[in-house]
Length: 283
Image (cartoon, rainbow, N blue to C red; front, side, top):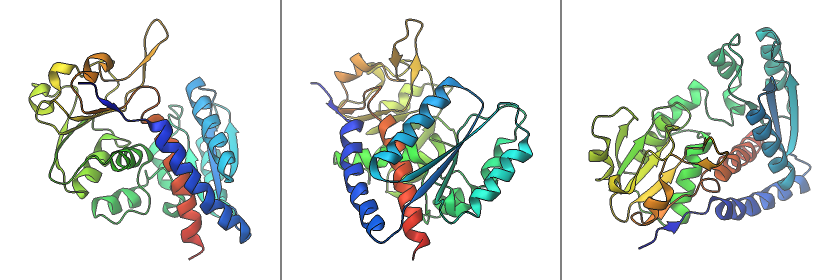
């Protein structure tokens, strides 16, 4: 047995083609969705992420605005930029690239973004709406995972899903979204005692802890869908996920590769949220 590879690049392209049609229709009406990205400092990984997001916007016709600020920028300057973007009718989505320098209050920054333009889905208003099942914007990575499960026809309702990770960006919202679709959800961490007791029962496993190759074949139920959110760079420079990919291939029913699995979907859902924001602003 060899797992079906869950190809995030393929699914992402299919979705982006549909999004481009939506954007083209808006452009025909004189409306152009806009995304503004604030990048503080010169973190190499953050620069790559921002560059990829801007390129993705350009590829489907979304106007992208990139605001680069020095690493020692005062917090008030970041806040002033956010207020201006909140009040700019040409900007439908606002994203502040994380992590931020230590002198900047990350929670304050995220809460200053208008909930109507919070295309990352991190504002407490949108988080609260997600808990009640009425979210306008879902966090991009778990939203992308839900789209992957749907595209590959992987059942959720009535299934046992195990989420390994408790971050506000992936783990917690992922659990809520699976629960909303009728799954029985267990939330674990890398420190969970006898983690394999949970994972060997799981029909769906989502791993997002940042520990290379931690989930091995012996911990996976035969035929389970295994979604690997981890991206870890080894000493030899290679990228691996949180799942021991080669061994998992022999047991899992579905498996995301790293890279090329969840990653492309995260940016695609950012585009979806930006388009959705623009559409809602015209209702």
